[in-house]
Every structure is written in structure tokens, then in C-alpha cells.
Amino acid sequence: MKAKLPVILAIESSCDDTSIAILEGLNVCSNVTASQQIHTEFGGVVPELASRAHQQHIVPAVQKALWDSGKTLQDLTHIAYTQGPGLLGSLLVGASFAKGLALSTGLPLVPVNHMEAHVLALTLSDADYLQRPGIEFPFLCLTVSGGHSQLVWVSDPLTIQLLGETKDDAAGEAFDKGAKLLGLPYPGGPVVDRIAATGMLGTHRFPLPKVPAMHFSFSGLKTSLLYWIQKNGRPKSEQDLANLLADYQEAIIDVLMKGLEEARMYTKTPRVALAGGVSANSRLRIRVEEWANKHNIELRIPKLGYCTDNGAMIGAAAYWKIQHGLLGSHSDQAQARMPLPFQPH
Amino acid sequence: MKTLDWTIRSENDWNIPAQFLANTLQPGTVVWLFGPMGVGKTTLVQCICAHLGCIDPIQSPSFAIMNQYLCGTVPVYHADLYRIEHEDELWDTGIYPLLEEASGIFFIEWPQRIPERIRAEFQPAYIANLDIMPDYERSFHLILP
Image 1 (cartoon, each protein chain N blue to C red):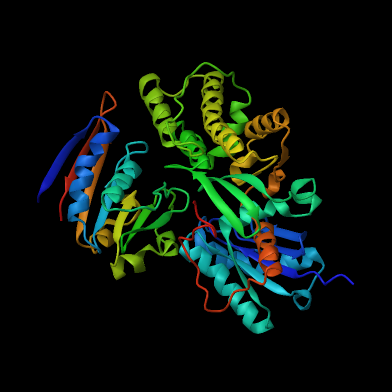
Image 2 (image 1 turned 135 degrees about the vertical axis):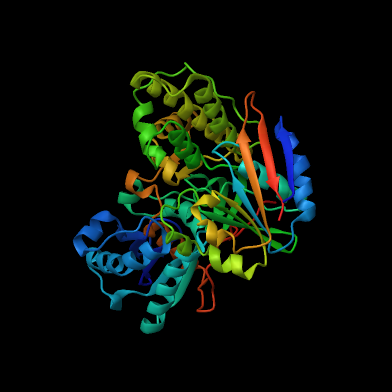
């Protein structure tokens, strides 16, 4: 007889979003990201940032996740939460809620590293998350978000080796700050993506940063854009803006593609995954898909709604930890700074 | 009030003020970093931390609001308050208890988000004013505690 699958309540609260998921094994039963919409349903105002927002979101989000999954508290076998890295105040809300619930239900806790979770989410068997079956080990993963840009080699669920990362700004920040310099709204990623799609490539040149293989740097791109605006002023027409953004976006993606190609050469991997909020960028998705086809690489990219931080990814990482008997305790503390489980050699 | 001024003509030039600050900063000291986006605030922090012997990667804290590194045994807190919209949100970042505990060195970008009367409570503090000049140069005006 097959062993009973764990039923995991997973809590993500490392930065801006509160997201709760219920998983049965590697299947996502529900995933609820607290948003303005939930709050409209449940009433109340939503502060923009961090812990107070999490405090207000967490209970309704857990209720909704349970409701959506068709499960009850009695069905749960484990409670997983993001231990770090992230903003301490935000992490504490998730960790404290998880511990409280674990105390009252007697269920075991599973603390999870947020960066590890982004990566292990690619193993979810849920067709909805990836729109294909989960990736197999080992694989190469590029995690690109507002706060991170990392290339990691995932030998097995517990061994994630950092191959390279950004030396300064994250890829998502390059989008946000570029948008800011041009007077566009925050977050800049989706706005730049949309406007750049109507632009023509090749009217502006941005320098490719000099960084060690498999590493990234985006700060120089931002400065180049700043100098361009200082010299020429903000673009006068919508088409000029679209052209400028198309080249700026392409430059960001060129940096990522260079790192990805270097990592492919280094690892000789046939399996690659993309994770993090920037993996929602339509141009990046096209470029990576073309590259993967060319090199006969099996590729996984989360579907659009799952690129940014979510509870399901915390549940995925928790699943693998549970399989290896790695449970937490009530004395575990939220950690603002938390390295990956396996550091560079 | 003692002040120091530098003109930065290349990224390498940050090493001179960075070396000076690395030699003088003690745990409990705050450096308020003023200057527009792209002026080099994070670059300066990277440079100072390198001189402090930090082996942690120093990345931009803009998204995370606050990063924490270890330079030897000294914790370094590197914050970017740009995304703070309301004074209340500063409590959510957890920065005030850390400033009061004063066990680390603080580099705080966009400190204008903290009301001046509150900023004045945290001493000793360096005020670093960075600005973008013509011809890709930067000016760095430092007010000592």
C-alpha cells in the first residue's frame, strides 16, 4: 500500500505578499495570495507594506486556502513557513502564526528557505503550476526576482549549490529602477514588458557588464540609462519610449542569457528551470525558450500567476524536507539573512 | 562641524573615502546616505564593507528594504528606505529596535523617510551627501559626528 501523502499548510510572508497554500504531496490543492481583492471581500484597508499587512492578511488567507482546497485543519499533517531570507518583521508574522497553529494542533513545523523554495517549486507535479509535470533532478535554475538574481545547481532536493549571483542590483530592480527613471509606475517589470513589446530593437546601446562567469550585474545598466536621460531628456514620444525600453529590457535579458549559457557550458545540463517574478517577463520567456530549443534542453517555467512569491513553493520545499525527515522545532527563529543549504565550493 | 569632500571620477575613486570610513566606523554608528538613484550609494557601501573585510556579497537592499551582513564579527545593516511610503511602515521594517540596540554598523539609504527628529536620536551619525556632477563625476560631502 502506498504511504499516505503529507497534507501541508504552507505560509509565505518574506516580503510584500502573504501567500498560503495547501499541498497534498507535490500537488497544489489551493494557493491564495492575499491581495486587495480578498480584502474587498473580507473588508478593511490594506497597508502597502510588510508586517502589518501580513498580520491583517494571514488569517483570512489561511481560511480561504483551506476552503478552496476542500480540506479542514484536521486533514493537515504539517505546517510549513518561510524562515528566511526576508524582511524580519514580515517573516516573524508567518513564523509566529505557524508556531501558534502548530502548538494548538500538535502538528510538526517545517521551516523553509525562501530561495530554496523558488527552486524546488519547479518539482511540483501540479499541472497547473508548470502546465507540465515537475522537473527531475539534477537541474540548473535561474531565479530572478525583485530582490534576487541567482544561478543554482540543484543536485537533489537538499543540495542546492550557488553558481553565481548578482554583484549589485537584482534583475527585477533593474526593471523597477529603469521605470522609475522614466517616470513610470512601480513595480516597473510589467510596465516595461508591456511598453517594450511595441518598441523596435537596436536604437540604443547599453554596455554588457564585466563580471565573472555565471555572475550578474545590473547597476551599470541603470546608470547608463540615467546618463542617457540626463543627456537627451525623457523620450518625447510613446514610440521613442518604447524603443528605449525595448533596448533596455533586451540588455537586462542579455546579461541573464550570458550567465545562463555559461552555466549550461559549465554544468552540461539537459534540464533548466526559471523561477522568480522576472520569469513572468514575456521577452525573457521567449528568449529562454528559443535558447532551450536550440540546445535541446528540457525547460520549466512557472505559469504566470506562480512566478512571484507564493505559498505553493514553500509547500514544495517542505515536501522534500519531510521526505528526508527534516522537521523544525519551536525554537527555530526567523532569519533575515539565510544562506542556501549548500554554499559555493 | 567637521566635513570632508571628495570628487569621484571613477568607481575606483570610492576607495579613498571608503577606506577612511572603514577605519573610523565603530559598532553603533549610523551612516545616513543621501543622494539620487544611480549616484553610487550601494557602490560606496560595497566598497566600505570590502575595506571592513566583509566576505558576504553586498547587494542592493532596495527590494528587501534591509540586508544584513557580517564584517568579521560586526553585523552590518544595509537599508534602503526608498519604498517606505508612510512613517508607520518604518516600525514594520524592524529597523528601530536594531538602531537602539546599536550593536552593528548601519548604512541607511533614503534616510529622508525617517523624520529628522527621530534620526537625530541615533548617534554617532555620519551624514553622507552624494551627488551626480557633469561628466559622469560624483561629489561626496561627508559630515562627521
